[in-house]
Length: 236
Length: 185
Picture 1 (cartoon, chains in turn blue, cyan):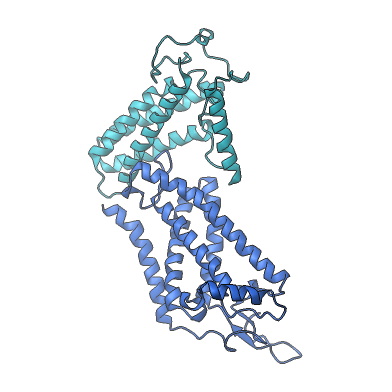
Picture 2: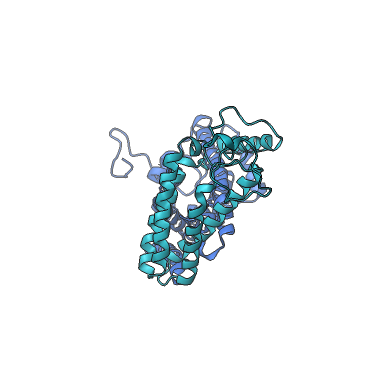
């Protein structure tokens, strides 16, 4: 459907602008699935699944932070994280009728990206050290802390999830706002990677490809991090 | 998640109400022994009070019960942490198992009448008292496995790791039925 090979029948194919690379999209949708899955497994007491779901999220976060420095243009923090001035002027532009959707994260959306990333990092951070009241289930790094600390980590793990839920709610609300008020579909490009290029912000061709080794290095760093987290506590 | 906060507030309010000297709710489970209504003569709340007697100070008694369970959790964490090691600290694990076994032996006396949710803040559900036979059967299971755990920890690491899960399973079997869920279900 999204391939350039699928041209429209009667007219010339609409030019596409590539906005999101595959790793960014994959990380995004895996996070969507795994956050929901982690929630469900926690509620159901399926702690072994919760454990691996959380560790997979750790890997995804490590990769995404790395990709924020090594990935293509729209993935880079330096490219989309802006100061208050840019955020304000963006907000002013947003309310005008001739608004054009930003190429990549807009300055306001960047706040959401950073907030959700930080909330997720805090969430898995607490989870790694948490244990239940019974001392029957625990995160992989829990052996490094006392019972009391692991209890506190567990409480924070539970409480901080509410913050994450609020941020996710805001994120979805913003997407609905763009869809309804601005007639801009942000969901499609996050699935396909591309959007129609007519009259849009950014280079017509979109993001430039990134060498494969950079992606593989990121995967290696993520896998190694998860491995260390699981393996190190067994060698104390 | 809001439900959880709400529940916590409700539990707190209940506890405060109990502290304020409110008469226990009429749905108080029938005491095991009819004579147990009178306050026990012991001045201090001791967890080893006879099974049927309402303690003189139920709230303090329940606090001791809570502390005991917390210490039980602490001892379990020692074993849990060690169970993840290739070479567990068997001395620490043994000491924890002995403690757990000791608590398991006492636990039958930790739930006298008048120390349930009607008396103050507790996660013990009312069915501890209304389904006492089943509760005691589950406790007997725990006592069996806890005794085996003591033996296992003085055997070797592999025996300990195997028996740790079996013992924890008995804790959980009871918690699933008789302990208030910590989450907003």
